[in-house]
Length: 104
Image (cartoon, rainbow, N blue to C red; front, side, top):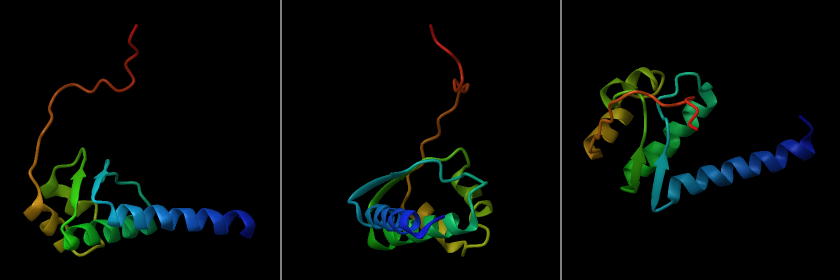
């Protein structure tokens, strides 16, 4: 990727990351994605760790139960999920997935 494209994209990415770390309230959607790159997994870990240690309100969504998230963050210190668990109230949604179903 040419530098004139990569540099602005990189600046924007890290600005979004800083906003995700410091917003008074954040929703981190689908944190259980298993096919994220190691780099993105590390960035997500950094955001979550900062939010947890700063006591910032965060809603997490995942199709993986909280107790099973260590499998997603396997290379990271398992303390991250333990810290999240200590501050979370879990709500389980059950039912049939309606993704991809066309409605008239």
